[in-house]
Image (cartoon, rainbow, N blue to C red):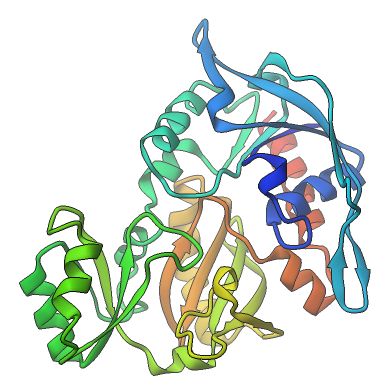
Length: 324
């Protein structure tokens, strides 16, 4: 089969960490063709989505002394050609946030792919529906106490009531811009003003969960089913566990409570065409639903001795066959 991956430029990817690379490697190892393009290389011509697609080859990472290591020149790309994306069996939309105007426009371009011919993971409409912070609000009973506002007084009152809270920009990634807010902090108003751009942009504020010090668990879901998990533990003075800010990864298990949360999410994710998703759970509470380019596969593979990339590609192949 032919797989297209809409990714950030290869030179910005980290082969030993990025899930996009793990998926491309898995597709290649299973005998499929790997093609790549970028969101800014998409067009709609004659009512169909086209892209500047390059046939791509990868030298898979190797496990050396407990770490993934890659060759110096780990990827190759042929000269790109303009092709309809419907020539592909599946398209993975794996552009990193922020979900800004160009990103949203790219999802509109992807709407012009016939789903009967080509599977898009994740669904363009699902990507627009599921802001990675706001989407979680619909799952009652599994979220920590949460508000979304750009109003300084509303946010300040919430922080005063809870004693401590975590502020999150609605469009960030990898822990960027996440702040720990504490009642009585003389900088509180300034922090809120900066984060909301002087009361213009809403932010999410959640009550601080002390169990965050024990880790922020990433669970990877495939068509609503949990297939693996990794715990990300804050290090040093950092309160965030995100790998992008130095969080330490540790092997973990999926608890019964976490499986219940996954079961609550599954029918909604399936309805919205969100097939490959990473959810974040702290102390038994859902904090985020990551749908744009969820990560964690490399770390889970390393700690659990599995190949989740192959599992995702095999599922995709069966889904494509089912829809044809």
